[in-house]
Structure formats: C-alpha cells, structure tokens
Amino acid sequence: MKIPAPILRVALLAAPLFLLAPRLFSQTSPAPPDDVTSQAVRFTTLFGVVEQHHMEPVDPDHAIFDGGIRGMLAALDPFCAFLDRDQFELLKQQARGEALGFGSILYVTLGKVLILQTAQSSPSWRAGLGPGDEIVEINGQRVARLDLQSLVELLKSSRSRPVRLGVIHPGKLVAEDFDLNPAEVALPSVDKIFLWSPGIAYLHVSSFEGKTPQEVAAALDRLDAPHLKGLLLDLRDNHGGMVDAAVGVASLFLKPNDLVLTSRGRTVPEKVYRTPQHPRHYDLPIVVLVNGNTASAAEVLAAALQEHDRAIIAGEPTYGKGVVQSVTELSEQTGLALTSGQYFTPSGRSIQRPLPGTALTFASLDQPAGARGKTAEIAAGADSGLPAQAGPPATRAFHTDNGRPVTPGGGITPDVAIPARPIDPWLAFLNQRGYLTSYAEEYLTTHGKVPESFEPPPEMLANLRASLEHNRVRVPDEYWSKDQSYLKLRLKVELTNLVFGLARGDELETKGDPQAQQAADLFPRIPQILKGH
Image (tube, rainbow, N blue to C red; front, side, top):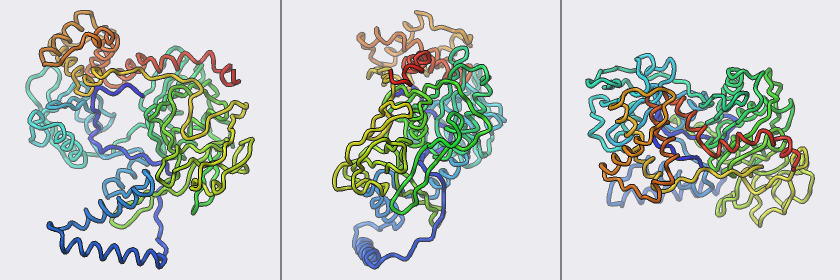
C-alpha cells in the first residue's frame, strides 16, 4: 500500500472513473424476448403500486435510476454501472485526457484551501496563481465558515462555471479577487518525471488515456533517453483506463507484433491485441513497481512486460481487474458500462480475481490456441471468456517466454516482493487531518521562505510536538520516537510543496519512499532475475 497522502488533492474536478474499455460506442438495443417483456410489465406494475401508496411522493428518477437500474447492475458484478449525465461526460473527457476546470491542485482541510500546483496555460496559471496561494473565499462564501464536506462540494460544483476567488498571496494579509472562467484542461497521465539517479529515469503513470504512449515517450526523451541506463516505471495506484493506451505503451518496449492480451466474451468476438510498429523504441532495463491499487489496464501492461521477460515486477500483488467493459451511450446523454468478457495475458492467465457470489465467481483460463501457454486442461465453459459456474477451473501452469513460472489466480504477483512502508495509526491520523501541512504553513509564516536544500533541524521537530500538543493532539511516546525520520521527510515535502510546487515535493517524497528505494536497487539483478535465478 502506498503511503497515504497527507493532503486531500482536489483539481476542481469530480472523482475519476476508470474503465478498462477499448472504446466508447452507441448501439441500438434488439427487441426483448417475451420473458423480458413480462418482467418489465411486473416492474411497471410494482412501481405503480409504490407510487400510489407510499407515504411520501416518489421521485421516478431516484426510484428507477438510483434504485431499480443500479440495483440490477449491482447484482451482476461490481463493475457494471449506470452513468448519469455528469458521470458520462466526465468519462468522455477522461478518454480525451482533459477535464473542465481551472487547472489547480489544492490542499484542502477544514477551513483552509491552499494552491499546490497550477497547470501551464490553465485559467489559474493565466491569472498568476501558484504554490502557497490561499483561497479564502469562493463566490462570496468564506472558506473558514464551511465544514469539510460542504467545502469539497463547493469546489466540485464550481469547476464548471465562472467563479470569483478571494486569494491571499504568501506574505500578504489582504485578499485579492480573481475572476476565472473554466476551460478544458489537459490532465497528464504521466504525472511524475525525474531522474532517480544518473542514468535511471523514474516515471509514474497515473492512468491510461489516449495520449499516454506519447506522454511516456516524451518523458523519456526529456530525460535524454539515448543515455539512460534504466527505467523505474511506477504503476502504483494506477486504476487503469483505456486498454489501447496500455498496448501503445507496451509497444515502446516490446518487439513489434508481440502478443499483449486476448479478450473474449459470450457476445463479443475474440480480439487479439499485439504491439504495433512504433516510431520510438526503448531497450533500456525496466523495473515496474506495483501495489494493491494497480488495476485493469495497468495490470495488462505489467503482465505483458513480465511474461515477455522485458521487465521485472516489484512491489505487492496487484488488484486483479481484468474484465472487458463496453460503454453504451443511452438517451439523455447517459451511459451504461457492462462487463462483456475477460482479458487474458500472453501466457493465457486471467487477470481477474475471483469474486464469489457474482458472475466472476471463478477465474477463467484462456484457450491453448489463443495463447502461448504450454499446458493443458481447460475447465468446461472457460473458452466462453466468462467463468464456468459449475466449479473452479482445472489447474494449469503458466510461464514467461524464458520459462519462468508465473502465478495464476487473478492479479499480478511481483517477481520481487517489496512491502510498502507501514504507517502506524498516529501517523495516519496526522496525515488525514493535515496537521503536518498546517504546521509547514505556520513555519513559513514565522521563518520565511526556505531554500530548496532545506533539512528540518532538530528543534523543528520539538516545535512540531509543541504545536500538536497546543492543538490538543496526543503525541504517544512509542510512536514519536520511531517516526522521527518519516516526520522529517513529511515536513520537508510539505514545505517544498508550498514553496517550490508539487512536482518537486513529489520527487522528494518518492525518493524517500523505502519501497521505491528497494525497487531502484534491483537494476543490477535484472539479468539474473529474468533467467529465473
């Protein structure tokens, strides 16, 4: 598990919805069979009775869309979903790698909103807003008077309409008004880019969108790709996205025409995804870092690089989401996401973890003809692309190109297991409440701007403890003594965020992460690990 973020980062956008879907499409529904018609009549009759006799007036939209439709989909599997107008529009924006908003990443806590980063050419950037600016008023509403939930809702609702912000710049006491109009803001899917050490590139890919392959190539070129000696590709907390984008990223590192995955379902034809010829190709050694929140298209990429022995996978077992989700556009600009099949890795593994009590009770296996698997029996019904329900599939072995065994059963098991840094309950509490960020802001107010090379002195931790106790936050001795190094790192990161921006703070935080450090130490061992030793 990744270290929990000590701040609530809001980009004036709704929460993202990632789907492992090759495309968005519309379709005309066929005429329903007689049994469907009869069940629809029963539902209509039942709704009529409820509407007539319930003690309160029934809102049809709430009862049917939020109740009937969402309840029906929830009974199938966790990935089927009805998308209302806002959710469907957000999904389409996401596929383009854009969103309507102002281009600001914010630190949000009770009574306080600070700007941590603004996207270049965004409305916030053009207005001159940047790290450390405090938003004290939104459309006439004072931030200090709102509870946290109301504040977050206000920020989200403001993303799609003109807004007047009252902003206090660092070192100032009086707020200045800014009138901003929302615009389509490009959201980079490669959100962290830097040199880990001389010759070793670090990239964090947050999602897979249409432009992700181009972003990965541009990031490597920016870091002087011809002279790089390795790539640490961080897919932690990547919930997925478009499978075509994952195939595109794979084409940057695999040979042309390499098998990436196969999809199969009851009503959709089998589709085989292979790497296309790409104008850019990178032969550098790769370590892919994953965790339990690595899912969907991110697992597709990790599996392809692992099974073609192109990279070693490090970290923790991934989430296990490998279903084909087709998105159908409905009337009134709404959408329906339905699970229509499963994906299989080059060796024939199903990425999907078993989900008892759903249509995904058992993990499916690929057919031998559609994969490079070297063995054997497939359970009856598995070739449909959805799991057989009579019982679990027969055992089958899976191997990489070099013959290394890989683990079936859903998700991707790392070649090298590296646990995340444990976060004790007290640290989690400090992070969730934003106490460290608040203290960093207070420190800047009293001490002024810190240099980029700043290291927290011993007295700073003593002052932090006094500040916590002044705010009636208990400081347990058993946690305080062992959390010193983490607290120093967090304070340095928070100060850097507020003075130099989020990109520099993210670099410091990542380089201070023991899980990432151990992954970076694996580069000398890559040839040995890929040979199965």
